[in-house]
Image (cartoon, rainbow over all chains, first blue to last red; front, side, top):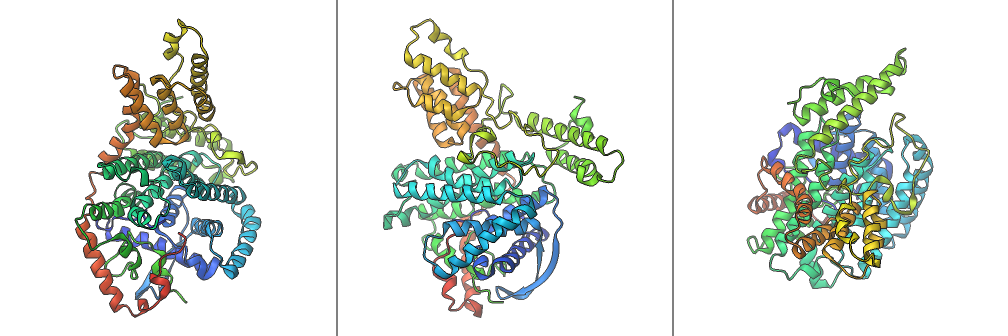
Length: 311
Length: 256
């Protein structure tokens, strides 16, 4: 589901790419520190984006360090960590706990313990209403599963449930920025959900899995239609984003919102129109081992390359 | 209030980014947290609120060039109270002490202007059930109670152009923007001469035009490049011993 909110690396300065990576690497470290290996599995570019938005908006003080890791063997990498990194790690725990349908019996017990501890202690510490957020996330995931199981073709409904979840992640505090963040998260969430559906359409058609775009799929203008819907979503998200007084990370954040988010779409559309029969997005997802080495596949699901961490 | 541009110390021709920088500098200076030991901390807090209000006013004015009536550009997605379902207010977490609950006020509310004027043509006819319900829906839209408006609209069996128009606005307010656009287009198709319906379609689309104009500086990521990236990455994989046989790496991907 994640992996769409990425940078268009070619359009960023080298320094900016480095900054982005340091937040990403910092996030990985923090996930490992708080939640171990299962935590690291939840690493994503999308949450890195959220960290950068909040870090900028709330003027976070980064702890900068250097690290070595197996995924990036070509030397030390800078990591940046701040309290929004920790927040994102906490949110990932909540998300993965409630999203986990498979029976990971041991890990699930571990998750449950961590979750309980999180909800009890961290809420007070951080001034964030984790309990409320967890409740909304659980509620929307349940509703989403129900709607998917009933094969709904109401795009707003299903995408909206996911949007609600993202809104909850973005609107960290109940303050003057809550509304714009909520709007930004909501429409970004809808964008991600619909993009994922667009990306998975052929696969879902073959396997008979749920996809809200199935009904529209036979339209001759299907790709244009999807582009229009996606643009509607991302544009509303950007309208809200531009209300926020983000300053430091603006070039990176705008690069992502106005350009990077279309990376996968462009690949999928080209594939659908028969232009690049080899580069299916599935293979782009599963063969992305060396992020940030010589060539970065920024559209790929990041959790894959971090899963080899053992130390 | 005094000139918001003066409050922030910027000229009217300042860019949005300049406005943001100015706001950040001033808000850092006057934020209550930075003035705990300041003997004039009440003045600082006053100034902080003034700076916040100035920022909000400028951003509001600047974000509505596409809307002829100067109201929200159609990004209305309900007031913060109308969504969040049954969880209501979480209460007790007033983290940012100086937060005024109505900071964004009507900004995200849709501000689609008064309804009721539309109903003039109905008042001369019989006040049948549907007309009464349409009026009720209009009243709900005026007060931004979008879910209630939708509930009433869904109880009306005949779907006139006006019904589609009101439904579009209600759905837009609730964040159902795909459906909203479809409904607005239906209303406009049913009554092509009706300017209001055309304007709604335009307004719902205006965000997309605005967005696309901002995409121009960026070159689109062509599929050719993706191929190049993929090939280099596979090469890297071959060379990178670590990636060799890790089943976790390539065996599908985790829940997120």
